[in-house]
Length: 423
Image (cartoon, helix red, strand yellow):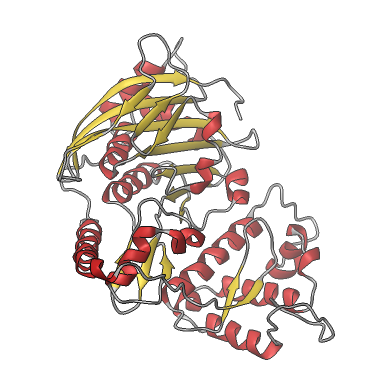
């Protein structure tokens, strides 16, 4: 925390101005910022405001005038440059500390929903508690297996060659599906769900599927066992991986929308702010556990993804209350699972949110195909359409069969229409 008043006796870590300016210099000279003069200037501007104790009074209008040279007639309601660039600065800061920071003594971050930079000393790495030494051999084997699985999954980041190319000529059904985003003047963000991995210096990465919050890592039994088996003591959070299906889905969606939407922006779930969700249209790719913002919206939906399948909170005639996923024993890349497509009005009552998710990476890929392939889109729209129109808010359940992590077959199961204006 930055402390300007030397008479303050609170039990806080004091960072002097020289330390902060030294850290700012590292950031400005880094590869992350070297190609972006606008973000270097914005960083310096916000830093000086924070150091001088003026950040709490910062407004979007003021930043527009002082940092971006906007005229006095500037209206933030019609020009979102400040929100967009502040959001991108937040992303660049996070990217720097994940890729370039090597023992930097100070962390500079820009909390979501505001314009005040924070300066904090780098926290000490998590130190894992020890477990039964007799289990070391077993957990050592487990650690190797987990690391191999991560490398294998991430190594298959390439799009499968059989994925159908996106056609330049949209059919009427694709037009209807994507009309809420195509006709809007709001920015469009595609948010890629990024699960939490733990990076162990000089060793590799580990993931406990039950943990997606770094503050909970030290309480994870799997994490502590892994650390003991690896004889490691230091660990750091990392949000640099995602599933093959999620990555492929983002490519398909971005490729489709790039034909019709002038600017489609990509972000990661750990960098997405609530301000962006309120101000922009957002396409979420990946399960709620990878997109924590979606967990707060679970109660507004009839259909909710749970660890073992999809919970139908309001079963209609002939519908099951729960759709169970089935993974072949001993073959985590083979099974029959379910995907969920959800279209909803934004949390502020404006804009739109589209959520594409499943518990397995292949089902997310399959759901994206239903939204980007003309033939699939025609089938989906014909099922959803009433009197020629699509409902503004709906949820669709798909069944997906896959082998070796590749979706081989997917089919429509049922859908729910959600009330308009639902929050």
